[in-house]
Length: 391
Ligand code: TGC
Ligand code: FAD
Image (cartoon, rainbow, N blue to C red):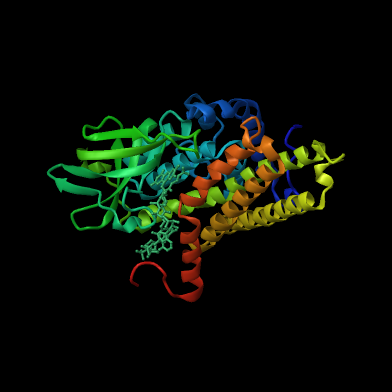
């Protein structure tokens, strides 16, 4: 295939500032030069290219929309464009960056003490340290409020007991942001250093999705951490959910990146693949699929961009973020499936990126709140009636 040609049917380029375009192009160039040539091999092996993490730091990707502590202080649209370009590479690459930025640096920045910020943020920004976010448990996924992990105060320590499951970056993390219930039953956030006695990790194997990403179990057995490792500035479920808003926003953009990659690849393939004496792009049914993809990508681009502008104005609501995550990931998954179909048998091999994106998107559809959970978040917002629990 030729080089990626970009997807912009509505002149959205003109709605971006020069700085936003420059940031996007820098990340696009780096992904094409350094990441795309190696991703298929990592996907096959089920490994993440950890050697690239310091480079992601150098590129200013980590915590890019935070200010101070070495962070780039970019606006939310530029941050979204970074996520779009990373995920055009692979959802695992975007995951690594969005966990580090939205789920580890953001809570330390927003809920942490000055000492916690100074200890972790500069190192996390540079990619010298890596973090993970432990919310989900074996028995509590969509319903994190039911978590059973405990952090009970004993003398000059908190003692953690419990298990977190499906944790991105878990086994490579230098610091884990762990959400647990305290003596009063309230959810709090705790920083657990790698190597703390009683804290262990185990990687999850056998994944058919997110193969180029590390996913682990975190286990805490009488794991003692100092009192100063608790976030002083947040209690309750709104702590972790506030972080999820950051990461869900990035996913709304990242999904557009996946969809653009699949659409462009399928279009180029359809223009050159000949059946019945014609390029398959000439058949009406193939054109219908390509047009559906482009139309949905265009709508998703506009949704992500306006959401970014609302965030920059400080007026974006969590429910609006849910709509963008829900719609854009669904759109990307459907686009990837159609692209795979257009490519016939060639669509199932990893010589082409489409099947990899398609499989990854099955995870993205589920994590950070499943598609249906976001539907119900929006449903509650517009009807005033909650479909969750016993409200
Ligand atoms: P609910 O009553 O809705 O909320 C409790 C408190 O939280 C506040 N809140 C939010 N705050 C900020 N941002 C948000 N998005 C928020 N959503 C809710 C809310 O205002 C309330 O605050 P307060 O002060 O009044 O107490 O709680 P609920 O129990 O009814 O929530 C239900 C539900 C289903 C919406 C929620 O639990 C949910 O979102 N579940 C999905 C779980 C999820 O998304 N897990 C993701 C785990 S992390 C992950 O997947 C990382 S993947 C990483 C990668 O590799 O990219
Ligand atoms: P469940 O909650 O058991 O849901 C199963 C099904 O039931 C879904 O279809 C769901 O929509 C449906 N359902 C549940 N409740 C309702 C309801 N009230 N109404 C209607 N339908 C409902 N978590 C972290 O904390 N940190 C991470 O870094 C992280 N990384 C991940 C990486 C990967 C590769 C994966 C796959 C997951 C990761 N997760 C992480 C976990 C992820 O957030 C959860 O998988 C997700 O929240 C769903 O939880 P669950 O898998 O337990 O599914």
